[in-house]
Amino acid sequence: MIRGFGLLKSSSTRHVLKDVYPTNRILSSVYLSTSSANPLPAPSTNKARQQHQNEKKSNHSDEQRQKMGNYYSMFIASAVGILGSSYILFQRFSKVEAKELLEDDLALDLVDGDANKKSSGQEMTLHKSQAGFRERKIIEYENRIRSYSTPDKIFRYFATLQEAYNSTIYMVPEDFVRALTPDTMQPLGLGLDKFKKFDIKKIGPYESVHFGKDSVFHAFGDGGLISFSDYIFLLTVLGTTTRQIKIAFKMFDLNGDGEVTLEEFKKVRSLFLSMTTTGSRHRDRNTTGNVLSQDVNTGLATHFFGENGEDKLTVDEFIEFKTRLQEEVMFLEFCSYNPRQGKITEIQFMEILLIHANFGNQKHQKVVKRFKKAFEMEDGEEGKIEKIGITFQDYLDFFSFLRSLRDVEMALSFHTVAGQAINKETFKQVAKLVAGVDLSDHIIDVVFCIFDENQDDHLSNKEFIAVMKDKMFRGLNKPKDTGFTRLLSAIMTCAKSNIVEAWSKPETSQ
Image 1 (cartoon, one colour):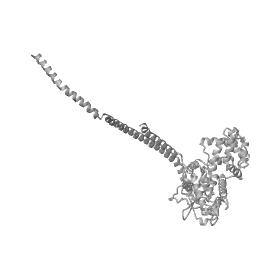
Image 2 (tube, one colour):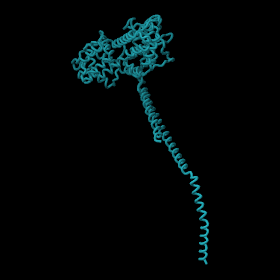
Image 3 (cartoon, helix red, strand yellow):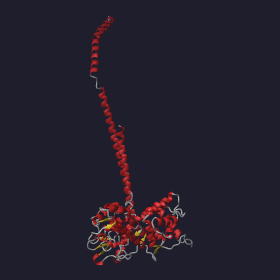
Image 4 (tube, helix red, strand yellow):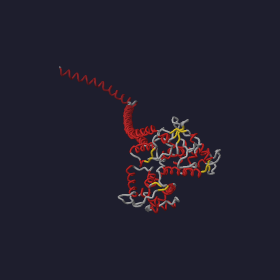
């Protein structure tokens, strides 16, 4: 019975399946036809999935770039903070002692009343080689002011006179040279914003003990005194080459006659200011009153263009003015060493030549030691070279030789390229033929003693030219900063380039 029921059930099931199968077949065919007519959105789904993955990658790369940007920002901030704090601490500790010494000496000087008794500009200049420990600290502090401060601060530090009624600040020629010359000390009792009061109407024109009224400094309208605008102008003249002067005059000589009018000269002066380190660095200071006048000094305009301002100035006349200015600055520098019988020592002349040299302490000491060994007595014996002193004419001849330094450099380089050593005879011949100057044998001995490193009687050409260029421009062609700002600028530039590179790489790969 049970078996029969099972057979019956299975047979009935077969009938049912047979009935259903055609239906399933029909549904399958309908499904397939529907699928072929309207396919499922599988590709679009894949595209959406891929887009979603790309968005995730993009978000991830954005997060990476943001992290890298944060890391670089933290690195830059840390570097700036460390370098900045180190620099500030160095400056603070190096300045404190010198400034305290300076203020102590100033207080003592004012108590004694010496600041009011001294005649301006006539004090004996103290050089670093003559100074003790206290004075050396002050001189090092003043050297940093010369090297890194603005023209306004340098002028206010080394100027010695202030008019009693309108508070106008003036330099005397000796102050101007002291501001230019490193390793020289400002007279005690004077310094930053410390001046001697005077009435310009009562004292009359200033006359230096070294010059008469025919001095080039008397071309200015304040009786031989130098105002702030005059100070900037003089620095600009000294920092401009003869070749640059000729080009500037040609640019503003509208009719081509080799002369410029007063109005044209104002444009020439503005061009000189933009070309020199001092002029481009200056910013007017209304708080201190040191504002650069746009007009030419009245006395200078009269000197160049006559009383009515209608005369014309030639380029040769202006170059002659510059030459006279250089020679008078040199003479004041020469006299600051207190020459005896019109001569300074060979060591003092070496100091004059190397005063603007970019030597480190070790290098400088090595040169001085070698120089002293050649000129001074040791163990009861005379030095290798006789000490006969240096006259101002010797110094002037050597400076005339330096005026042709560009041609001299070319001539000396020809000898170097040809494999010929530059000995004393060759050096003297170049000076005679190229510069038209007959240098004395003693001056040549001094120069070779400084720049003959190997002591083989051959000149170190490159070093000699580099030092003499700095001497010619009195350091006015050097950048007036510590290099710290340039270091920060280099760090920022490097960091920016790395960030830009990090941002651009993922975009390029996509």
